[in-house]
Length: 268
Image 1 (tube, rainbow, N blue to C red):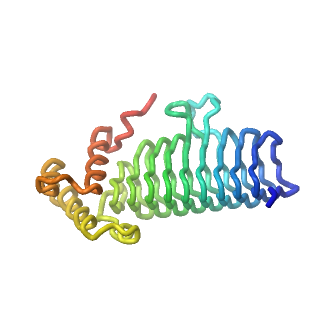
Image 2: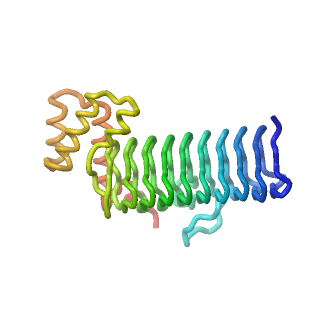
Image 3: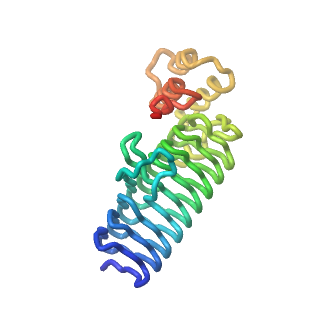
């Protein structure tokens, strides 16, 4: 199937469009944009800057990807946005290109679903199968690990990290790193329990879920401390892989400022 471009779309001749791309009415595509096979742009989509879109993505009206970062120190460097495959970006999603402060890339992985008016700021790294509900706001340099879910209206502080398989409840204010496998809620958000529903859906074993529940109780209810919790949970044996991921994440978070492990990498 050939690429189809609506007659009202404005596509720079230097842009690279693969086969089976569909471009709707009033879309604007800049000269340094690449679009992979099978990707579909509904009407009024804007792709600008050095932006690479993978295969089989679906972009709804009003999506803007690759615009300048909302950072007053940005000096116009040719930083990038890189998008994977099979994502859905609903109405008015915005993804800004990076600054020069890290690797110069804002990235979204594959099989993500970003709902209406969600925002991915400069230098963010969003991995695979992430769900961001309406009006989720990621500050600059935020990392979101695979299979995380962020509910409507939550705001994530810049340089925070969201762990794998975690769940952020709606309207939460995320100031600190969100541990993997946990459900957080509040203003500011705190761990409230283990994200059991998601873990069962992802076929985690009952032993792993029980171990994570016990880790939550020790760390966030009894507050026995990292080393004591590790000793109790290991019983002299190697930790379960899920527990090792959890403890490694928490240790990294504690190494940064304000409970954000990546904050120690912050540039001026």
